[in-house]
Length: 278
Image (cartoon, rainbow, N blue to C red; front, side, top):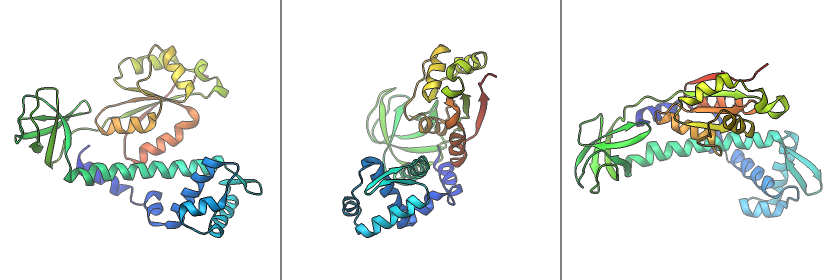
């Protein structure tokens, strides 16, 4: 993804909850307390949480009371708490946005003063001025002039990794389209209710296929295609699309809507394929 495009994408998200949680100590503390409760539930020691977060036990007690009132934490008795599904969803939503912010810092800020790793297209020598471009999701360095350029830091043969510093310009490439294929959860039939006549043509020509949910993994296996990625597939698909790859994401229906919202947050295009048979 080019620096210009990434920065534009980040600016478009400036009004989402990410900017709020980073500027609000209260929201940061709420996030930390929810994480601590999740890790230690149901026996939660408020004094230990207070010491870990650097606040008073009274403050922790007040935060937990608010979280219970908002339905994000359930009280099971004195000193016994559990994070509800609503609380888990709140934590996941904010941690995903923090990941987006971290990616923005790494890609758009730190990389401006750091070294980029690329694949040498030909024999290169330290000090060579090279063009930098992206192809099939990989970053390459070549003696041919490109819209982005930099300076080689080490000797490299074709196909070897090479360091490039002082990167200037924009790395031109098109972002991929995410193909989102919805399958039913097990309560609605799971892999047995999948339209394999629709699924197989989609995955046969795909270079990168990911599964979200066990039902999706089984459906892909039955279709004769083992997923390239299962754990962390949602963020993996986003990263691939940013690098110009059009991934196929086979996803269980209860994860479907949240994933579409995530794609819209980062500004990626997508195409929906409903594979649920009647």
